[in-house]
Image 1 (tube, rainbow, N blue to C red):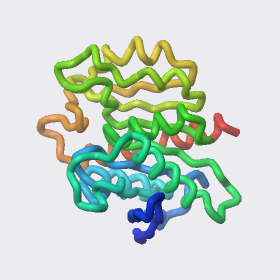
Image 2: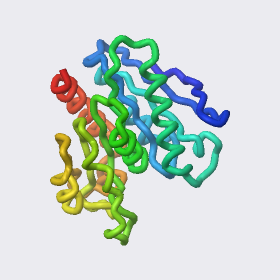
Image 3: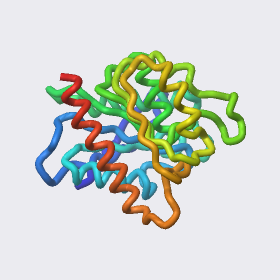
Image 4: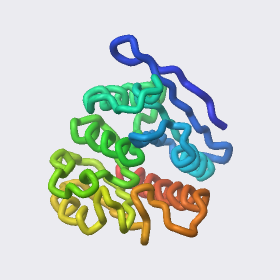
Length: 224
């Protein structure tokens, strides 16, 4: 079951979030916040599909639009604005709960912003990235990884084997330099969207939902 939420942001801006509530017994009390990538909002089939599969696994999920997508603009806001929005969504998800553990992550840019929020001290139970954009395509020296060693909570990265934004091999040294416990899952023959030729999208969403759900349940136990 999905319900829309209106969220106020700094400067009078607003955005919407969607809460996916499990219809089966919850397998953890900790919700998951799932952010979209740079090119599409929370209603994109990738985000909605992974959210549905997580909810089917007994995990509450909240998706949201970054301000520029809510305002139907194509160019992302500055990182500081994206981070502020993410933190505001986290605060709204925590409001009124006795259990304050929250997992946060997202696809590509959404996952990167989640790691930045974690690196800057937001108390999270764990952070994940689905296709971490380590560098722009064809520019392997322009790394977006300086903040990653500051993360102290568990991290899950799901990376396509042939991701032009950073292969698992390129991520290896970055992961080795991190202090946090990191799990790097590789999608064989996967691209930046983790798609594999010949595998239906819904099957991909199911695999990703299952991987995140298993990591969340395992990590929830680690946190306690």
